[in-house]
Image (cartoon, rainbow, N blue to C red):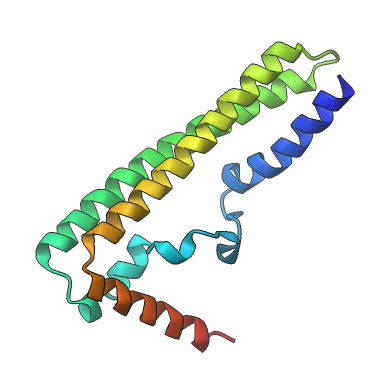
Amino acid sequence: MKRLSILMLLLLAGVGPSHSQPGNAPARDADPLRQFFFSPELVTRHQEALNLSEDQREALKKEAVAAQTRYVSLQWELREAVQALRDVLAGDTVDEEEAVDRLHRVLDLEREIKETQLRLGVRIRNLLTPEQRRRLMQLRRERRQDRP
């Protein structure tokens, strides 16, 4: 039982704060897949330099809005699931199966959030031409070099 409690605390330490608290996103450099994707904000900021077509702009807006809507909904569900798990763990005695079930719900939501992020990244990448992707990578590199 003690081992289960320690495991849950470790998992919650990694799961809870990074997604349930606004402003506590993990550092961007910690994401090993970041180099392959472009945020909607980055593409929008450089849309003129990229010479985006009207179709690309509309598709980008559509994808970003859909992903954001899904993401916000999942965030609410995740907060509720984390709280439900905390409630189970807060008792004098813990029902192990209920705790594990609640943990599975938290992890399922985490997976859905990551999937939503990945799908948006892939869709944005696929909207851009190879030349636009190269230009955006160059602009991102230049921006990083300008930072102190």
